[in-house]
Length: 139
Image (tube, rainbow, N blue to C red; front, side, top):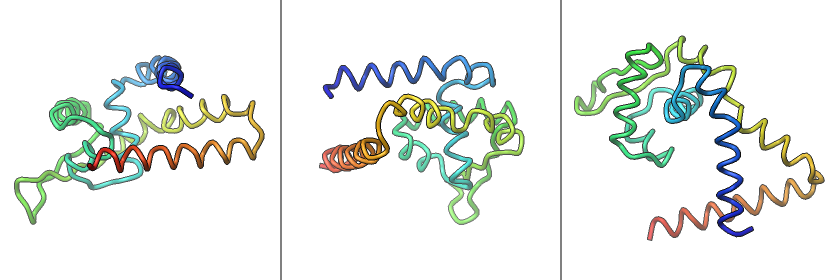
């Protein structure tokens, strides 16, 4: 697979999910943050930015909008007053619940053309490729 093929796959996935995410009242960034918070509750803004590979300013703006919509709650960290702890609200969980596995389901549908062994191999390849990319990023 060359980069243009990977890029095309990502763009097709974004196109697939974009309408459903918008219908739920989210921007793509807000959806990514809400999904992340469903699995990693009570985290810092920096942790969100690092995990999702997003700019800290983008995360801060999105969190402000999400807080205004009642999707997240920001609390000051009692141990470090300069840090906020972010939690998804019940409204946030309810809003994202229908689309939380949207991309996983889409990819599973696409990969159904592969045998179970080919799917396992592909997962292994991507795990190794991502680990290599992370290692390169850290250099």
